[in-house]
Length: 334
Ligand code: NAD
Image (tube, rainbow, N blue to C red; front, side, top):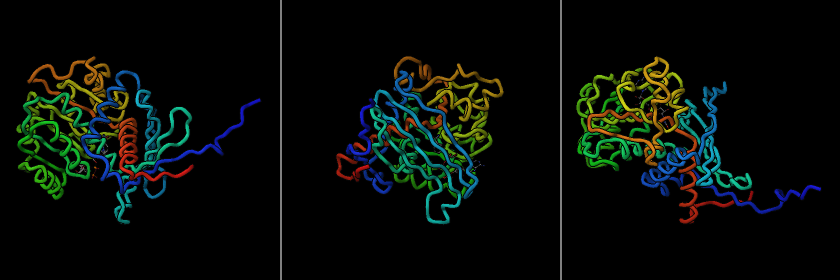
């Protein structure tokens, strides 16, 4: 005879951390640690991402999907679900909407419900910051920003915690948005200069691209030797931020090779036969010390940050801990 199922009667408390609490709990440094540990766990084979689902739902012009995974080392199991609702701005809401659900890895019972909007910005910025920490030259002085949308400010703040930059140069397809970069640089106590793209490449030691572009914005021969480029905008098939020839010239690293070659920046270079999947190194292997990162001051390094579900789980688990410690978590029986 089967044992009785106690699911309906055994107490299960679900922790809720609403979007409005995340800003007061989570910071860039905590996100950096969580994402770095996740990339390392992925490289050790302790953590893996499940296939991403992303669909146009045929309502409200929305793109909906979910990213999911399991980190055996951290016992983080769950998913981030949400997407892009272009009509939200007119309603006073953010177009990108997401929520993270964490499950108990031992029982499958739901553990936590966490607002995912700010966490997405923090974990994406943390990924490029991890790449800068492990791949850029230590004497990098000028940060180049391509893109001035919502994510760009988070990217700049996280990057500036990794290197002693003394200047930010920026370019954006929509120049009227450049004030965001200027304001963020000011907040960080750094001078900002709006420049043309070739000049940006000539000045910058580290370049972050964070746009929704579908064409190459930077050409391979503009980038000077020794530069680290973090391509963070391309997270979907068809998007593109840099000349595929730049990936052939650079040493290429990524969060997740399978995503890099299909929906990341490397999709174009691979499709054109300029690089192969085997040429791309998971950044986790560099963190773990099982693969080489930068080997010379002249080398161009490029990080293809595609965004993985495990990053979301890592920062959500961290914020649940912080919320419980700070007494900011709501706990409801479920
Ligand atoms: P946003 O809508 O606030 O800003 C979009 C940016 O792209 C702006 O700088 C805009 O001027 C620029 N842009 C728009 N059309 C362009 C074009 N045709 N050519 C060049 N630039 C163009 O978006 P955001 O929230 O800042 O996100 C930026 C990008 O990052 C998006 O593509 C988003 O999907 C991607 N993203 C990636 C990850 C990841 O993990 N890799 C995570 C979140 C967002």
